Length: 181
Ligand code: FE
Ligand code: FE
Ligand code: FE
Image (cartoon, rainbow, N blue to C red; front, side):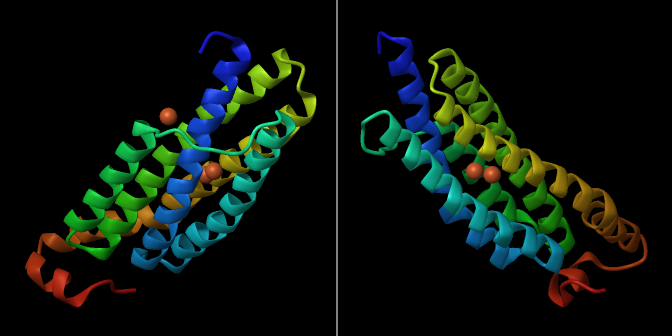
């Protein structure tokens, strides 16, 4: 990697790999979500992610190369952490809170990558690419904001409730009984 353009392309491959990994992780998270709203948020973002992959393919095309990914250890680590938390959570509301936090870590990685790529595309005078990258950047930001709203309105208060119930209940019962509304 010797040129700015090569650096741009390398980072494009990084986020392409990451989006593909996210595309595999999101359905698993949706399946495990106990909150209907959280499930819907994951499913909706799954559809957006499919479009985002297409946008990246268009950017590769604009550069005259075919789309390819380059292994991104950062996204692998974030997803690995999410999967670990999903297994470790002994309560549905705690798992929801854990998954929501993990999903925000994913969005923040993407926001950072797309922000950088859009700025670099401007510098490289690739305005069409910059436009596509910014469209995705806005979707990632909107997703992050939506997750914050959902955490504050529903997911975190419900997770906290399990702690309050712990004071007069055997924790095992909740594990067996699952989520209560
Ligand atoms: Fe994405
Ligand atoms: Fe990466
Ligand atoms: Fe995203």
